[in-house]
Length: 432
Image (tube, rainbow, N blue to C red; front, side):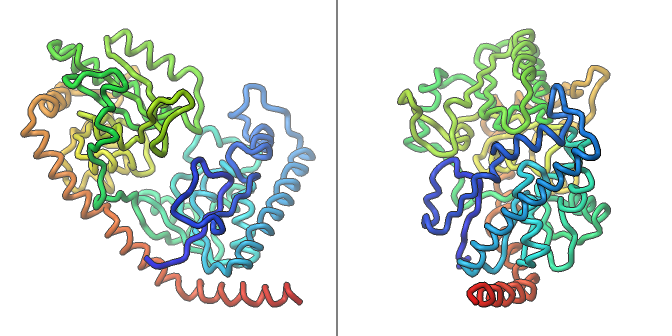
């Protein structure tokens, strides 16, 4: 859109080739896995520890004082970068919604509220939505900085539900920018990913059902396996062809038992499960052993069906990626799907988010038969994926994203211009 973009991060997982190196700022102590973050987590989030330490009021004050002091140091580094590069506005990606980087959150809070640098907070999920951050020793601090509600700040959320919650709890008026996908350049089969099946040991006739997500409990992967178990029980003629693939890793919500539970359940139902995160990366390449690495999009390009049965999602990025790849989807009607996605009349297999006494999703026979139809009737599949692609491209494509970003920057323009003047004056004062 013509803006000069800089990035600020704790680390870059892979080289960021889209920007010059001089516009990439790295601050290691705001990493999710920094030594500082791990120490604070061990002190203030009891549910993250098997044996949490006892925190006295005096100890709590010491921790808070240290956190705020070190946060101010981060703010100083950030403000220096803002000054040196004459930055007009900061876009804070989830820094002040989830305490995954407490020093990053403190630094951005200080930058936005004390240094008064124009800041747009883009919230994906909120800390009060995660049980592992409940009953913390810093709830008062989190309530103040995650997110802050000072005048002159802008807030963006992913869904109408999140907007309602933020208005109710924080009394702010957030803008809405849903997850979007590049439907102008969608994932397709090409020379690179055409050998995916052969490389991973699948036949051309195999049915690849992909769970294109991280392995975390709220994704309810056990329900996807339950669905596959029902499918092959009702249609045993395709049982040996159905392969259930989980493409990504455990991520930032570790659970040592979950993978074992998934494998045990799949074995009991006769579902062939494949965990392939060691062959999936953010960029194409090779691993240390010289094996070919694929992106999650390459996996989707070879999928016959995507399962997406979460109990909760901030929006549904994997859902959009699947529709962009023209892969049929079976999904639960989770809350945000109901309010922001399902109303657009996609042709997905929709399973109501109703759970039985055993805790598992109630899967009606009709849903199983709809899945079977999509897997075995090419005409039905083609009609569904083309219909979904057309609607999703219109509602969640980059054209809609450019429009929303442009409107937000225009509406926030007065504060950006005022911030630009404040930063310019601070540089003069600093030089004197």
